[in-house]
Length: 511
Ligand SMILES: Cc1cc2nc3c(=O)[nH]c(=O)nc-3n(C[C@H](O)[C@H](O)[C@H](O)COP(=O)(O)O)c2cc1C
Image (cartoon, rainbow, N blue to C red; front, side, top):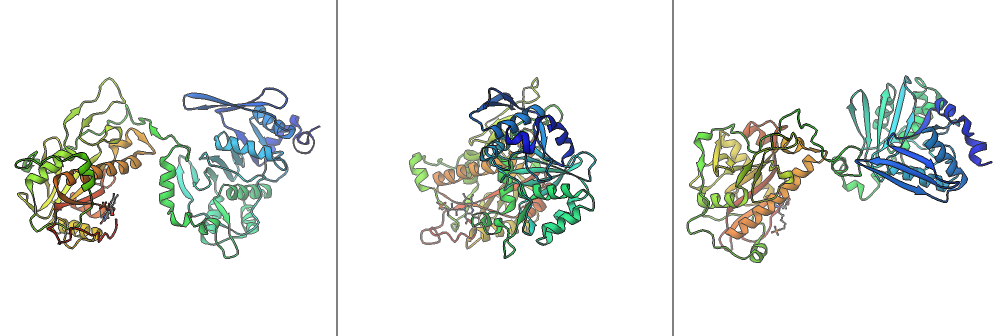
């Protein structure tokens, strides 16, 4: 008889055990495990449109029995009161195979059945998800990880643990207290278990705490009261919001769909390719496509060699001709491509000089004019199809503040002659893309920065990208709702400074 047969799970009793126990390991609906010989199993699972399979060969008896039981019963549980899959006590091989199933997102752990005061389902979110097996309840005091997020999804709490690559679904009333207490201080496991046992049985309380710790929601603290994440030289340099954004926007690090899912196709109309004029369109300032005589074209190699950030501007301001040529070369719309009305996934696009994710061109250009011969001071929106500037009725002080902010951020001596602000119309991308729309916008900002840098270099203009600016001020100046369109990039533009007048040097306060 194998160890599994005797000590842990007589196979005839597996289902009963699963129903009785408070911790169960369940094969996800999209996965199956079938026997293909005495020591060989086949794992099959659905991924997107594909059915994938892998063969696990030369298994030891224990691992074979446990995984086969998982395939047959789909759900197996621990009768021991310890939070461990049956047989994981000893086997390195079983531990390895369980972790392979976890990293393939084929297995979930549940504590507490329906109707229990605390139900917890932990699912691997990332291909990097790993559990140290056997699962053991924490021994040292535990604290809540700073990387954990809690949000409502339908009628449950979703507790995200991106560092450990797990997402937990929590129902019932008693886990909130554990999160609250461990957010405030390191708590002894025994105290938390005691607290939990006011609502659930002792075995379940242990299992709840064990799963919270195993999935990184709670971490054991060291003698100084620090979590491992707080002493990790790499992690301390990464802010939780940045880590979460990265995990959420990349495939393989979170469970949700990522990419073009067109989840609003057919229900919400796509945002048009060009922004409707919300401003004083009749007062549009027409721009020229090229300055007098045109800019002598230089080789691409030369353009790339000349490109650099120049933060101070010349005494003689940029002209309306130059501004027109710059915008025409960088951001004009050559044509609008209508949507195919017969296809709900189709949306109106446009053709412009720079590339853009999904051809969405969600970035709008706003210009704060400080000094530009031929264009009055003020805030304008560039109309890329008409190639003109549409005035926006922002106050003079709002414009000055935007320019002054750019001066500070670039460390320049004076405020820029022209500040170009990129506003993103978020729904252009989020209508089509799931979980990666904002990441795409930031990539688009980078693309447009480089296009502007190269164009400025070719035209002999001074320019500098800015890493940040005041989106709140931009919202006030334009009256735009931040959720609809917000500033995501800024770029200063002006005439080159005269030689010896700040042509070189960075003074970069933020870049
Ligand atoms: C995304 C991005 C953000 C930047 N942010 C700033 C900034 O806030 N302030 C600044 O003075 N320069 C900024 N810069 C310019 C960089 O400092 C500059 O590109 C870098 O020092 C290299 O110098 P170079 O452009 O002259 O080759 C930024 C550049 C990029 C691409």
